[in-house]
Image 1: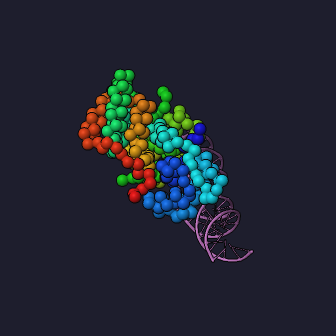
Image 2: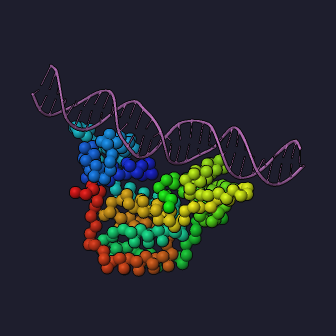
Image 3: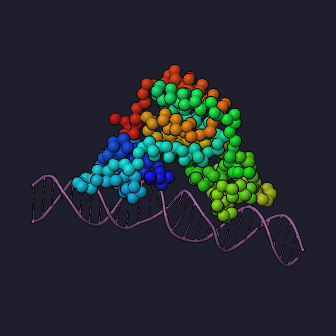
Length: 138
Length: 138
DNA sequence: TTTCCTAGTTTACGGTTGTAAACTGTCTTT
DNA sequence: AAAGACAGTTTACAACCGTAAACTAGGAAA
């Protein structure tokens, strides 16, 4: 179970290409990344190499050019990443932070429906207040 | 308007103390941080110095020990930080990511109510589907 | 006023990250 | 078989980060 903490921002950007393509060559990555970044080809190559070292990408070396594929699922990576940020937030502020997020994200009808029903359910057992935990245990 | 992108994880951890206290001495920070980390006093001092250089903390030097206070509001910092992570996510996956977050966070009754009403409102104009934007513009 | 403690400042050091050039090995095309 | 193109590998390098020791100056105690 690979741990996404060690994936840098630039590496994440590269992974998105492979996650979306399912698999692809370095050329594919270089090509698509030109649309979003100003990186030189060499930069992308470096990032791919680092992702391999960290076991986030694996190369099929049976033929050239190699074909790379993700060794961690996008959903799993997103889960870890998003949760990591939230774990560093004051407990008391999480609700508002989520509100903020919802306000500024495009969300589909289906997902909104899911969110509402999840919240309805969560409401049954929700506490009246959530304490700030920033100063640690008393 | 300071930009939270340059605040490191360790620095963030220190800021939480000052955000919660409103202001405090390095001793305060060292003390509270002992509850959550194994950092040596010197480490906290270094982090405070870096936060000052980056203009996230300001010291009142009119008397010793200095009293430090945050130059960026916690809410603003959280907003920037959380949004930064979400901006690096595939648009299509944001809804699920938020679901995930809600599922694993403690949220108060009040916040849940707010979230639901925000979602109800958002539902009026929500798209049926959200496209993946990982490969950039076509 | 001499000494000591405490807190602020300087220096340190290896690892990671962003960014990329240069080198090299392997197919493909003459 | 020789040459060229492309992609994979090595090397580079400054800034930032986590982590902390060592040094120093200002205020408190003796």
